[in-house]
Image (cartoon, rainbow, N blue to C red):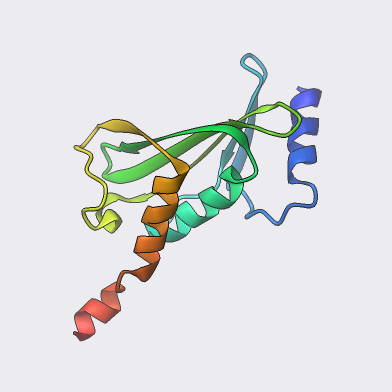
Length: 134
């Protein structure tokens, strides 16, 4: 357990990362889990997630249209010291604006480039108040 806590501290030290909502350490598979926060808007959740994932190596990602109608994204990777890390977040699936085609309950692998593109498109999309004004 001490080595996992040390690996986490080494990884975040000196990096301007968003504060996690929770951090868990699982000694069996020797994995650090970081929840970077769910929220009322998907775009900011994905942006915080991407900041964390760009600090990892050997990254794989998956997104999931949850039964509660959220888009849940999980990224697995390794720190520079070799510790396994799982970083995840979620937000309302309706915020995807039809850009993510997953049926309810469906999971799919996704690249960081796809996550970045979705985040950028959501940032450029008009807000609810902009659509109401039009």
